[in-house]
Length: 164
Image (tube, rainbow, N blue to C red; front, side, top):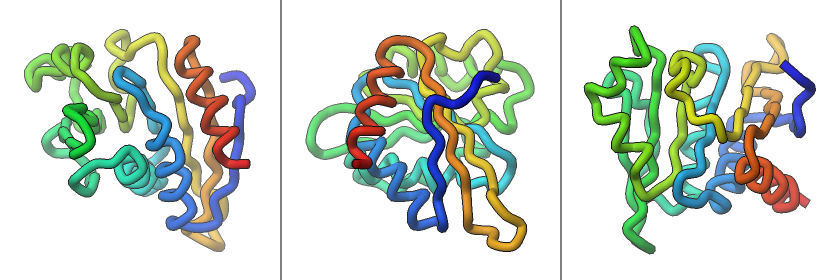
């Protein structure tokens, strides 16, 4: 993979969630955010922050067993789709949970374990890799960002500007 467009250090879970909140405030319908990292890396912590920043009326939790959670906000009729593809045996299995409808939905999409989607992953997306920084402090993380496509690039630029 190429060098990340942005790399930030998160000293603890609270900061990881705050970075998610900052990104969530910028999301528009059909934005796709991919969260990559090993088990316990902090993907769901970041996603919970995204939901909070976006304005979800419910707390984001991992949809590992259901594959997809839908979250709504009171400000409008948008839906935030939170997908966890960890237990996905094949990308085609997503069709059984109405994954095609998600792409046609009216809100942004968060995807944990996006590498399991294969060709079903939209070509335009923001890719965020979350990695445990140190074995000495299990809460430290490095977040690396790559953008694929014009809107994802704009989202990354807006996120970077919001942090200053």
